[in-house]
Image (tube, rainbow, N blue to C red):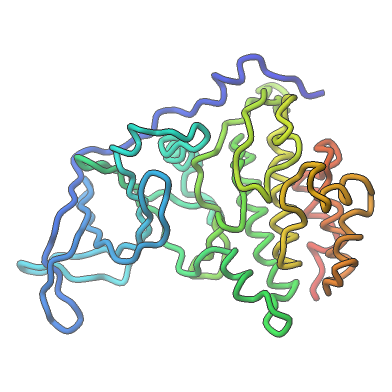
Length: 339
């Protein structure tokens, strides 16, 4: 039987991140493909790696994420290599004025360092260093963009992802979440926007700023319930027990709800609800009937297999205790289908 750990506030804290000092942000001479020498903004890490800032990938609450090219020095200028990375550049000034309680860039760095680089479905941190004004997190670059963009690009009847393709992506995500659970970490903000596709067409979980450590019994391995932490994440994905915020919660079941919402959007092209409260008519259908998920999909005439509908019904349970484990999800017939 799960218990609530009274010291969960302490146990939720991560170790301080390891950030190397003495990095630099400088304009350097780079030779372009047309042999023109131009000054470009570059980051120099304490390890001696040199990164050219190229394309802005996304804006973050405390900075930006850039695609960067690894440079090599040649005589008095630098040349580009074929290696690219993604660098989250955090403003120390914005960080000192941190206003959003739930999202913490320092916690994100600690999470990535705790997870290490042993799983290809969780973002790998290559190095982390600071300059006078910035904190720079160098990560694996994923060229395929995020998964929500793929859904939007493919959300037409004639250009729709097959269930086999969706299954491939979902298995990747499931592997990443399982790895995080093995390290007793709950992401809390799992969404298609926080899944990117790498050069090998595999999914990678990113954006760890809302992660929490999950307390557990070291003798039995059973996780403890976590005291209320408040609602966080994207509205479509927040489970009902987190929105209610009245009782301790099982972090693993938060993961399962968000996995179910992601799979629903991948298969159906739209979320099952706007928000998981009785104010939402679609949520009322799901919460008031054991066949609610199936009723929504068949009512909308969405052409997915009966096995996929059963899978979604299996996962999207409003009562956390009714949600399956990752092992049970893996053993569902849809996960092993070939069509």
